[in-house]
Amino acid sequence: MTRLTLRRMVRWGPWSFLGVDDKGRSHDSWERCEVENCGQEIRYVHVCQLDGEAHQWRIGSTCGPTLMQISDEEWNAAVKHADRDLRLLLRAQRLLTFEHADDPWGTTFLGSDWLEEIIELIQTGSLDGPTRMKKHHGHPTDLRVIQGRLRNAEKHHGLRKLQMGAGR
Image 1 (tube, one colour):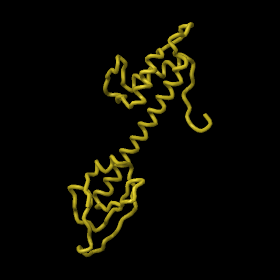
Image 2 (cartoon, one colour; image 1 turned 30 degrees about the horizontal axis):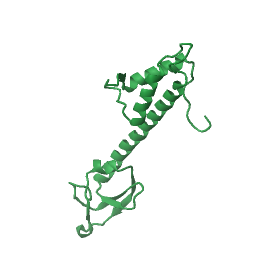
Image 3 (cartoon, one colour; image 1 turned 180 degrees about the vertical axis):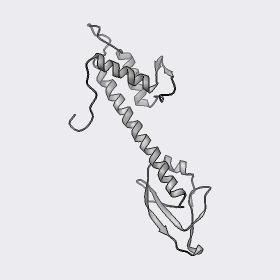
Image 4 (cartoon, one colour; image 1 turned 90 degrees about the horizontal axis):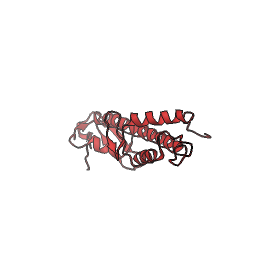
């Protein structure tokens, strides 16, 4: 029987709760939790499954809800960050057409070099959270700074807020 910590289990992907299996009053029919360092005897077995996998994990009434909570927090945050990065990428790519360095009218605001560097940082997942200011090749990687600069450039060029969705 493979046993893993809840944190490691969550890293594999999102989890689904399939139900509770009541093993009855007799201790003889109880099972042991499959989570590493737990192994507690359980009457109410929480049956959970990694999305896309066939194996069903049988874990305890403490570990089951904890696994589901950690999974929801972790994977909802991952989706939120992926959505944020996609929006930043699309905004930067949209601005790139307005920010060519060889613009004879001199109407650039950020410059195509800066935008190309930011696009590369977004695509490689190298952006930092809003609490740390770090530089990559002389460019800030702080999300708030980048978001603010993109917003100011969009205003400079008279661009509306980026709309995403079907037919947009």
